[in-house]
Amino acid sequence: MASAGISLHWLLADKDMGHEAASTGRTSHQPGDDSAHPRAIHKTAEFLGAVHLVLCVFLQRVVLPLPRISQLLPNRFLRHAIAAILMILGVTLLRATHKELATFEQPHEPGRPTTDLVVTGPFAYSRHPTYLSIVVFLVPSVALFSDNTWIMITSPLAIVAFQYLMIRPEEAYLLGKFPDQYKRYYRETWRWYGRNNKGLS
Image (tube, rainbow, N blue to C red; front, side, top):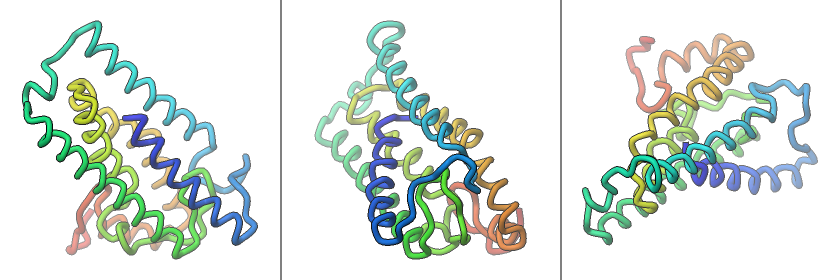
């Protein structure tokens, strides 16, 4: 995980949640609420993201320097242009996801209760568009901007971390709360990206 991507996600989420709290009077998640995660999981995910980023910098500079991305893609303008495009796509997907959740008055934070299953907008093509934006767009963008090969080649760790720390608990929570709806949604929409029009698992 890249801490920059995770921090950006929570920065955007906290901003929107502030507007929601101001308009609805609802406050942030409290221990014991009906939710997929305790707040501690969020802190752990962010902490692991920061550790991953620091470790990659340490590996690149001290322990085992790998050929930098700039050696594989020497054109700095092209490298930064690709990074900027990925960053824009990632942020755009995050914003679209937050907007869709706000339309149905659902929280951005997994640590808050969910009262409705959102299956439209970005959710029509990915069951977890927030994590998709971080793993596919923001992590590679950070790697390109920082010219750190370790971040790029260890980015699959972000998929594993999200899979076990965030996604599996969230899917179990939603399946328990919306059993029939979520089973149908699970069959029709892939975890990361894509639709199964035949309705197969």
